[in-house]
Amino acid sequence: MVNQQCDGGVFNGNDLTTDRDIQLCVEGGGRPDGVEPQQPAATCGVPFIVAFGQETGRDVPVGSLSNVSRLFREASEVAVLRCLSSAAAPNIAGILPENPELGARMVDAVDRLNALAEPLLSDREFSYSAEDHEFFSGLAREVVEGSRDEEFSALAEQAIELSAGLVGMSGPETIERLGGLPHLDVTGDQTSLDVVLPDWVTETLDADRPPLLPVTDVPAAARRAIDEKAKSLGAVAFIALGRMRRVAGGYVRRYHGCDIYWSESTGAHEVHGEIRRKYDALEGPRALGLPTTDETGTPDGRGRFNHFHKNASIYWTPTTGPFSVAGAVRFRWASEGWETGPVGYPVTDERSVGTSTSDADRGVRWRRFENGIICGKGGAAQQALAATVGRDRIVAEFSRRLNAQMRERDIDLGPFSITVRPGLNNVFPLGVDDWRPDFWSARPRILRIGINGFVGIPAALLVPDPTFHIRMGLSFSCRWPTDLFSHPQTVTLVATLEDLRIVAEGVSSGNVFEAVNGAIAAAFRPPSDRPYLTDASMVLADIPTGAVDGPDDADIDFLDVMLMADGSLSVFVNPLPPVAGRLRRYFAQKKIDTMFADS
Image (cartoon, rainbow, N blue to C red; front, side):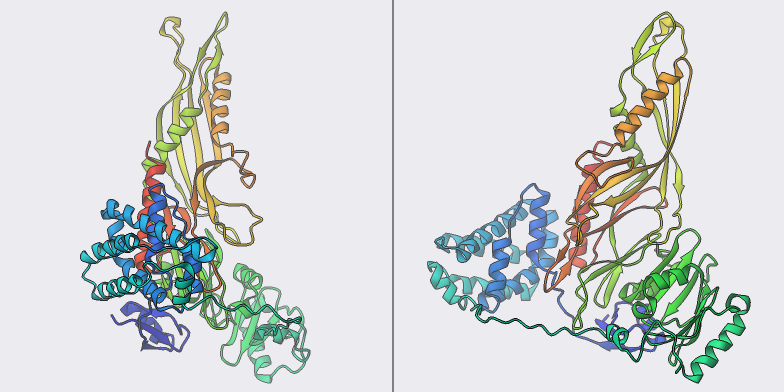
């Protein structure tokens, strides 16, 4: 379908990619409005090639190439190369997994381009030789040959023609050809800064409209509507706690069991219980808008919700807790069936990389749900793509790691002792516990594992083999140092021992118990170089996030991990734009397959 956005209504600005999206837009008071498709800034061929290089064991520096691209961004040669990189992205994404040899040559090309760019930023001698030109031209034409993209082909020929003019030029000549270095004005002895505060801050600072103090000039309509709503609610709104107060966009009166908000556009609605507690914690009137519904039961009977004026909601269930959903992520969730759709209820509030400005939303935002993640940027949002590893492979990996920690032990048999080593003979899954409620993030599912083992006693001693039985619960999460001021570049995937029960039977059962308990403690003892791991957690892998929070754009590759209801483990990656999302999933699957290769 034609790329459209929702114009007006509660879902204004959200991308419409399905018929259900259009229906939801209309139901929310908007209308579909055709817009020109935009090429996402993240759709670029170079990051794909760099990721491929890292996957194959090569670190490809691109710092000098990026700096030159920014420095001479107005030059026609650089502009064409940028367009070529964007047009090449879909072709490169298909080539890298299928043609590793050509992929390796692309890695060489990016490495070579970065080396050529470096002298332009220093005093070193620059030279773009005829041999360089032949190498890049041949590679470009080879990639074009397998593509039916006419735009890509035309751009490649244009880039080849423009770069031919750089052959043999010196560094100063090349800089002049690219438009010269920008002039930096460092004169002057005074710096001034105009700070423009958002509306909600100026409202807070407005002496005539203190938002958190009682007011006497409450409109009669507000008083009447709030009083009538309180009477209709009965005991929950029987005792008023103070007078009416002004809040962003309207008025509120607090009662012992609820808060009632009113504005001309929303009417009077109450918020209570855990949803009220979350609404207050998120500075709800400012961040989410005033409520447009009372607390209401969900169609499936599991949960409760309130909708709010700024395309936002808070949903609660007894097994998850109260969590907000807003913006493009909420629109995608609604389009796919709300809580009855494939991802279920939210289990966290918003997480993000990048910030919003008055001009644009640069941030990548995502929320975890019971069965997946929805990720959005600007008006676009989609379900996150996932790499997976099955339950049986997880169980086998823990069996392998635990068995490696078993140590020889002396067992006292009365008149003498023998040295034995406990062994595992049966490891099996016992099921998955569901999410558990919490306020800021629901506690994750738990994979339950059973292990049976024995200690072999020589048959000649006529003593039955001691046995032991282990029952443990494991949760999976990503951790990083808590003193970071931005999203981490690397996170640590861990399995945390939530609970443990060991039963040892037979001769010298105390020694057997100590041996097994010691092996488990060693397997789940965090390494000393990870001070942020303070519980019984086994390090499984370090995962680069690819988080970028630059002045012009923000992006991220890896989002989070989640234990699914069937006991499999999913590694979720950013799905936007779609070409980049598929490549991220490809590399994530390779990494997780390597992690569990011995299982």
